[in-house]
Amino acid sequence: MSDLKKYIAERKKRDKVFAMGFDEGYEEFKIGVMLREARETAGLTQEELAKRIKTKKTAISRIENHAEDIKLSTLERVATALGKRLEISIVNAA
Image (tube, rainbow, N blue to C red; front, side):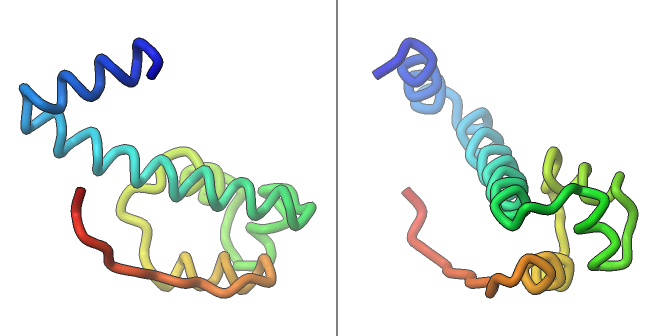
């Protein structure tokens, strides 16, 4: 385990507020990364994706870099524009 992972694990054990905020932030970050990877795999630029879903390039950038509070309808439009299907699951908390 890397030093960073050790630090995060130890900090999460002793600081519940940090743990909650970290997990939420990580999930938001992960969504943005997944969307960027899907866009790049589809061979689209942010501008091209924006045109497909009738928004601005800055909106795509914001979604990919700060996917906080993104609407489900927006995720569905992005998935459709990328030729993908959106799948959502609810899992037990760690």
